[in-house]
Length: 167
Image: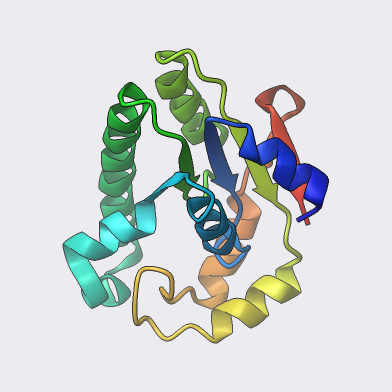
C-alpha cells in the first residue's frame, strides 16, 4: 500500500475492506487496527460461534452462518459508530448490496466510508489459499472450486462507491 493511500485511510472514520478470500483484507485490517481503528471481522464472529466446525459444514450451511455473522457485524458497527469509534470492516464485501448496506449503517451516523478494493490476481489467491489449514478464523479452508465461484460472482466496486484500489 502506498504512503499516499495509507495517509488517506488514516483520516477516515470507516474503512470497508473489499476483496476475494486470500486477497489480504485481514493483513491490512490488522495494520489499521494498530493505528487505532476498531476491527470488525465477519470471519472472527463466525469462528467464535462455530469454531473448526465451519470447515466441515456444507456450503449452504456455511453461507447461512456468514449471513448471520454479517448481521452481527452490522450491529457491532452501529454500536461502535454511536460511540464515535473509527472502524475497519474485515469482510469480503463481495456484493454491491452488502457494501450499500454498510453505507446505510454509516450514513445514519453521518459517515461516508471509504472502500479499499484489494485487486489480487487469481494465481496469488490460489497460492495463499492452498496453504490454509483451517486452524482459525483467518485460516479457513477455501477449495479451488469455491475460489473459482467467488471470483466469478464477485462484484467489483462501481465508480460511485468512494473506493480506492489496492494491488
